[in-house]
Image (cartoon, rainbow, N blue to C red; front, side, top):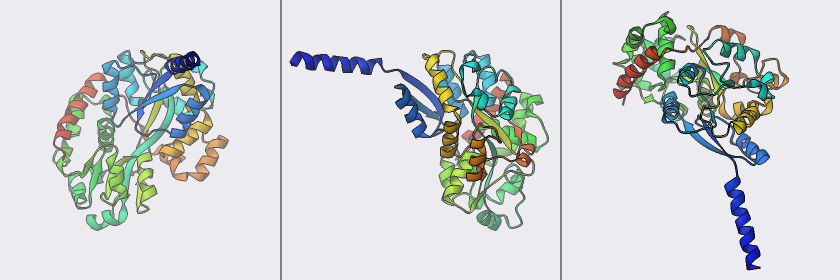
Length: 352
């Protein structure tokens, strides 16, 4: 009997040691936990998740050489990752559900350097402003313009500091929106011009009540901010808790981004990575992840799943007019990115 117990224990231990593990590096809380649980239950594979809140954290993780099986880079990060040899080519023929992704999103991704060959769309969204009109109007004194000038023109944003203004800790998004607001294209701007474009923010940085990519959601929901730059999904999280808030795409347009699924070049389990990616882009799982995160699903707008989703969650669908008023965030060269990161570090150091 003692020998039988030992044998059972040994087999159990071997089973535990034999369990496959998939390492997943993603933006914080960027999925429905139940979807991950379903994958684990159906495959017997354990998903080991690690979250990040800034693109800088993801790039540092990739530079460190730490091995992950699937990562979630934003589209504008792919150029640098591919140039550094950090991503494996992606064979989309191995993804059964690839053909069910939104052709418009795929075409947008195909226009980015090396993107189509190394990643597939996961979730996407826009960068606009969250406004508490009651608080902001009282502080501003005159009718609020629906313009980026509320954040980028020092005399205007100064009028709102008394009710709380927030900025995301995202240099690529902030710089791109500032340059586009001023009628400039970041991709044809010199590193010096990119750094100079951010200079108007320098005297404002100590006055921003929030400079982060997560805590500002709570600050908005609690009425501690009357205005903030925000990713669309985060905006909707705050609005869900505070009906006085609204998400605004300024007259000058919003920036769009596509967060993708990619396999690192040093992935220990590429076969598992393909299974996991295909599971995540299955229409029903894409919808579940969108519901949980408040970002946009990567499905065709005329598909049955998306039509139902649009009826249930109208704020999570970008209509044709909003798409026309928006643009896809640009991919920068290594020199441009270096100048941007250096300038942003100096600005960040002066924030509270």
